Image 1: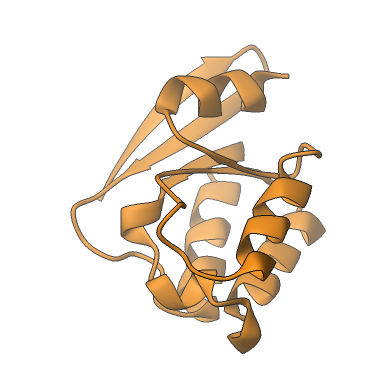
Image 2 (image 1 turned 180 degrees about the vertical axis):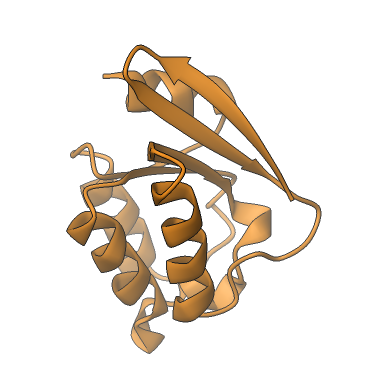
Length: 119
């Protein structure tokens, strides 16, 4: 795993780059959040490919548990990927509603993630 830091004045954006799954469960998400939070990164970019597909199945609660931790610590998150392959209206609605706010955004490119997190 590599962390690429994109500076935005006082806020640092941590782009997490890896070839393997980093988040398989809620504890993995909390561990990653804690590690980056204590490196003074208040904004994080993750890639869909590094997150278990179970995260996107809202019935199991993994996404809710992880994203609640990000909200509690006031750490903003952008997840970069192609989310069109996930079935079900609930995940599409969740992504749509998340993208209305600033806390968690689902985007298709790194550039879009950086733009959203810099606002």
